[in-house]
Length: 386
Image (cartoon, rainbow, N blue to C red; front, side, top):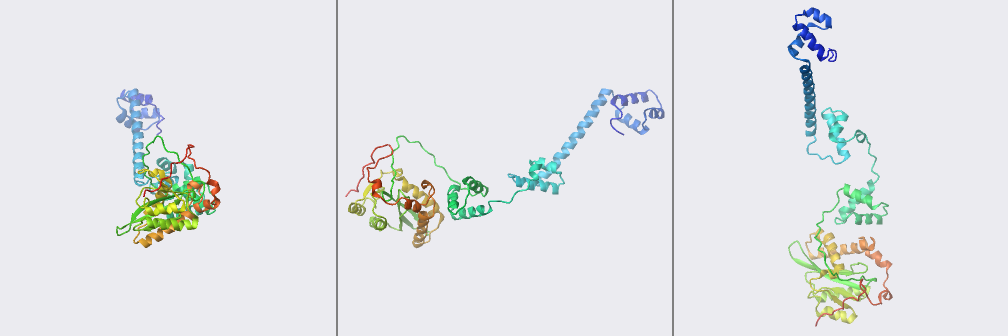
């Protein structure tokens, strides 16, 4: 029997006629129903008024709806348990989750999409073939070889290999493949009255020299003397040994000077090897001015400090040296790669060798008096004390 055939008023009226003494057969024939329906009404709705009967039917409908919602929620919960531990971060992951719900729990497509949180149009999307497959493969290879390169340096390397690609595409693939590096940012303390600086405009105008140290696998420490041309960013030499007195430093400088020429200025710190008579005599003999930075002020020699940071990240921290000979070989390979293959961001991603080739040595370019950025003259050049 359809629920809408008899209204609440009709059911209450029929039950009142039955209570008044009407015969069951006549009552059923009059209203067109069976006697079983009358007895069911009597057992269920006997003694109720129209308003009470309506309220009872509403409660029954509400209870049925709650049961249905509870069953749906329990079924959804059972489906989600099968996806526990999986983060649905990408549309591809959500499509796989929808297919799993439809196969394992017989969910409809609409219900599975609603539960996972994806539209049906996205589910039907067919991914196109990766048009950057070759670029992606090469990017992964380069990042494995140069582990401390960011996406901009890797983009510069790709451009040098004739990849015509935008840096934003490289960044997107770089992030998709999770190649990024975790860096610890130091707290920057604002300083007032910062000193002016001047930038050399020709090779051999100013060199920077500094020492770094490391240890072999057996714990024995060794030192390196790092030399850098501040204009071209080239590293002419890195001297590696357990001990590097002033005489060894002079030998390295003389060897480089015979190939490149003597510099006008050599910026150094106040180490005992650099304030000794050996370096001071070499500088006097060849007309090289020694500029000693203030004690505890490494930022006054920022060019070599920047080089030391890259040198340590990309070479020293990547290798475990077992002997001094192995250390010399690996460091020399890195130095050649730094000069000839590694793009330099301050040189518009040219290599130091390419930049130096475009700026041949010419004293007339920088024979004029040097000036700082604020227009003042540079600090006076100091010679080592006798």
